[in-house]
Image 1 (tube, helix red, strand yellow):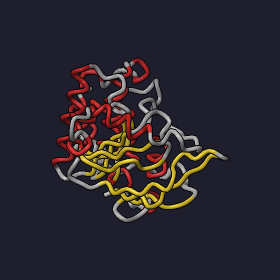
Image 2 (cartoon, helix red, strand yellow):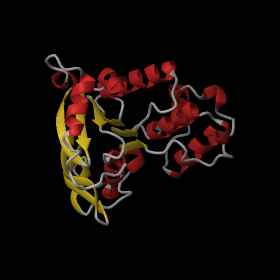
Image 3 (cartoon, rainbow, N blue to C red):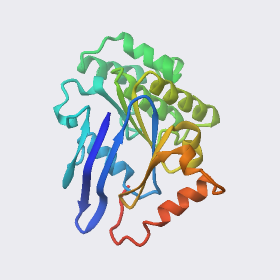
Length: 241
């Protein structure tokens, strides 16, 4: 489980995340929604200990990320699809990560198959398309077979087949009892992927609900999302991505 307790981050006079309190439960896909600049990426960076909060805490299984004994085997993350050496092959990149984290080499081949990169595993990753780089990023997130997954905009660059693949993958991981937290600004895609939704605007929690509840009544899902995020437009702090 991921728990955010009054999580707050400012950059000078700008408020990126504002007293955000959320629990992300295992066994379901939780979509993390908000317009560009709403604070989604900043929140994920604080969960992973990459940015320090000004106030509050981000906990994974009850402890901060920095206190995890084997982080790659507890949390898998995709924040930047380009976080690899462009001259190194996908297999070499994953093998180096496996060796440095005391993981069996067999995991490399398993995740390459899972993300559909086995045939391209010996190619330099710098030659990959954006969609292939996203698949490699997902492979890195899955490498330690973690119980918690955080993916920031994982459908970027994927074609329709790839979007269907990531949707089925995430739902399968959640069905295994994992905690799956996925950010996006695409409400229609999250409606097909997520079970629960956390909606933020300018760093503030606007809704924590299910897809069905958000789309209840005559209002479309897109209109409900727009209504919620519009409520934050009078807030004077400036969100960050």
